[in-house]
Image (cartoon, rainbow, N blue to C red; front, side, top):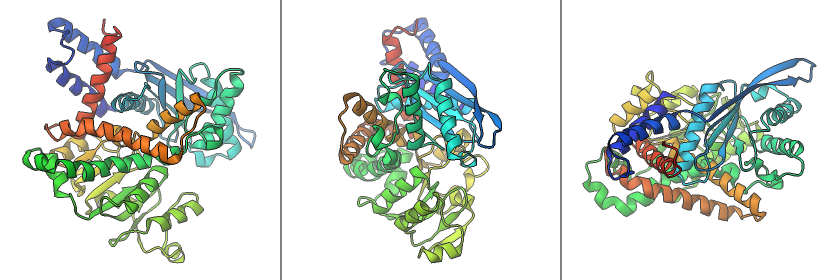
Length: 458
């Protein structure tokens, strides 16, 4: 993802020109150190790949490409999800591993960045075949995984079921060794954390709510006096009823939708949601609880026709799913896949507030175009860290064999994200950089400082 690489280099350039940052590095030594940082942050430590040998239930043997990329362990063991999707490729996994390094640094988590992927469409495989794929993944990568080495978690196409299977196989291949913390995002009975499934969606909406309600309320005076273009966008939408469209109604998007629907702090009207099949639209606002009940009973899919809508008492129009992005709404919440807003549709985007629930849903060209127009984008690195934050709590709970209540998990999650926002937002609203750039600068600053202190720049 060239966008990510460019932002890292721009962040390092800004830090190099700031003489108060790492002041011991001067002149040629400083230039050399920052060149080293570009190399260290731009490339992964390890790329592991293999072809999983799977015998299907019909007796056919297939070889399925799989990856585990370990970007950086400067701050702690590698941490990142395993994605099951037909679009998976080595470059995508490497970029997502890099994003995890930066995300963990931004949110002050003791992890580095890693990511895994298997090139399959899970819906095309039986439960028995998926179980075998999970076991083979652990077998093929068993030497690099472990509670203090590399700790995978769920991602697109995987969930607690797959993490349970993988932890079980890790236990089998490492007899007598600690295994409970080898994977996070597990079921509660297998040592998972309460609230883990909902954590990413809750964190995404909390980030937006905290900025648009709590932070604006507490800082309205100085924000109204600044000439910052993004402060103006935020203030223009303060205390008004916000029309919202949500792309993606899976685990992340549906949880965020319910949070927005039930929010007592902001006035939200969710007028559109979409999944891989369809968009549902109602200008008066959709009944999110009714849609959640429908998807729970229908393999996660939204209703696709008027008959299904009428049968379940849901008032909505069935429309083309891709039209959601260009609706005339205040807020777009992107909870699907990468590169959804790009140079071919960026000029049609009408929303002034965009929240990135998915990783990398806006291309570099579109990101710059929208930022220049004053569109306030809450970036993935800041917004969707709820999953890894609660994975961290799961990791701690597993080590201590003491488990928190769901309310305690959410309280700690919100405190963690609030602390990050309180660090980032004053700088963001005080200078011309978009929120993504500010977040990257903070993450790169922490990583650079630690690498310097550890003697990795010589």
